[in-house]
Structure formats: C-alpha cells, structure tokens
Image (cartoon, helix red, strand yellow):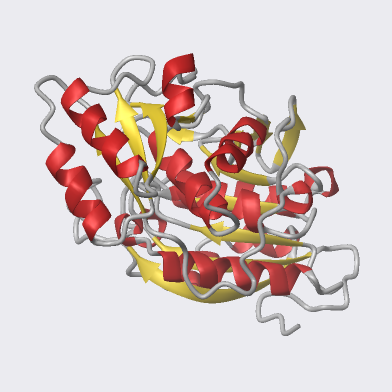
Amino acid sequence: MQDSHNTRHNIAKPNIVILATGGTIAGAVDSSLQTTGYQAGVLSIESLLQSVPELANVANLESEQIANIDSADMSDEIWLRLAKRVNALLKSSQVDGVVITHGTDTMEESAFFLHLVAKSDKPIVFVGAMRPSTALSADGPKNLYNAISLAANPESKGKGVMVVMNDRIQSARYVSKTHTLNVNAFASPNASDMGYILDGKAFFYTTPAKPHTLQSEFDVDKLDSLPKVDILYSYANDNSQVAAQALFNHGTKGLVIAGSGAGSIHKNHKDMLKKLMQNGLVVVQSSRVNNGLVIANEEDSKLGFISSYDLNPQKARVLLMLALSKTDNNERIAKIFESY
C-alpha cells in the first residue's frame, strides 16, 4: 500500500483509504462569498487531502477517485463499483477503514446501501459538505478531518456505516438530509445521533439495532445490475396511476409510494396499484412525512402492500432493490422490511 502523505514506518497509525465520488466537498466557484451556484465534483481527492495537512498526524492515507459527480446523478453502476471496492479493500489486513467523500443530496441512500452490502466490521464513514471548497466558510475540511479520525478510531469497529457531518455521528440506517442549505443539514428523525466528534475525538452514545454489514443477508459482489425500483408520490387529486402503469410497462419491478400522512394512497392511484400487483409489481407503502412509522393496515397487507416502517421513501427504495435481487416473493420481502 503506497502512501504519498506519510511514511509507513509509523505502525501506530492506522491505514485509511479515502474513496472519492465528488459532491459539494469537491465543488468550486469563483467567489469565496458564494455558497450556491457552484459546480460540484471539480477538485480531486488529492487536492482535498492537501488542504488538511493535519491529517498526516491521524493516519496513513491512500486515496482513489471512484467518481467525480454531483450526487444527484448517483447511479446503480457507481453504487456497485463502490461496494465491490469497499469489500475488496477491507478484506486486506493492510486497510483499517474506509472514508467515502460524497455529495449530500443522495448521501443517505448511498450510505444505507453500503450499510446493507458491505462485508466487514471495519469502519466505513461517509462525509460531505454543505458549502463548496472555495467558500469563506467551507465546512468540508473539518468534516473530512473528523471522518478520517472516526475511521481511524478502533471504537468505530462494528457500528455499521456512519455519516459524519457538522461534528455529528449518524448511523446510515437512520440519517436523513433535513435541510437544503444549512451546515447542520443531517439528522436522524426516528433515532438519536450515534455520537459526537470533537476535534477528531469521538464520543459514542448509541449503535444501530437492525442487521447491517456482516449480519446482513445481502451480497452484491457478483451482481452487475440492480432491479429497477421507482418512487411515486401520493397527493391531493392524485393522477399518478398513469405514471405507475407507464413505469411498470418499462420494466419497473417495484414501486415505493411516498404516501400522505401515515402512508395513505389516493384511491385512484391505489386502484391501479392493485391491478399491477396482480401482474407481479411489488409495492411498498412509505410516507412523504420524514418522521414516524408506516404500517399497512390488515386489508392492505392481505392485498400485498408492504410496510416501510420507519424507512423514508428513498431508503425504502434501496432496501426493495436489494430484496428483489434475492426474491420476488411478497411475503419474504415483507419480512425483510420487518427485519431491516
């Protein structure tokens, strides 16, 4: 393992690999006062690391550029590439942890995906920024320092995938982006933070209770693609039954419905879903409300509607894709949602 930032003679320091995918943390714009209107995924990971020389005291670092995109453009292809690389790296005794730099828009989805498919108990930490690297108040450098410190911490082992933003340690299972612009943009609406990190020193409070990483049944190392799953909203005067039919006609295997309230679906939309479910479509009820539980009533459960519980629509989609990669049995998929 080559190390361009530190000598390998100091065996006291752990070996951490940073996998970069782009995002705001690697974004730039001409004005230092501008925190919007920047271009994401401009700087290389090497440039980001050079901006935080203090990292040389934390770990022996190696970096790879997996992608350099705005995370709104995240794809199944990049997810699979990232997961396979993480699994390959963490099999090595020469790697103690992985940090993934990522845009914030879809970070919770990518982190949850890795949380379910990574096959190691070594630390895996996602990190990003709400302000570009060129901003006067850029949050990326400190977030990156904290993320690498967390990945280098032996106490981080066995806790699943974590997200570090604004000094808060969040579990990939529960974390969600809850503000469009603030640096304090990430929270866990249905759970508490896992902990806090102060100048690189971690304080843990909780660990995720649901299966993850080594306890998860999902394995993508031999997969070249993922089943097609989409999300549809339900709303007043809902006419999305047309969209549901079109998506099914174009190969969608599963739909997550972001229902109103506790997962309610407009009757017009629901009638179409019932017809499509008879032809093999799998439907999960979630909610457009980012807090609370969605549990399908007895009648809907008998019809085949699956409860998302506390998973928001975008995370329910991740779990449904992985479930469909193993089975198309509705009862089995419902049990998966109950378990994870």
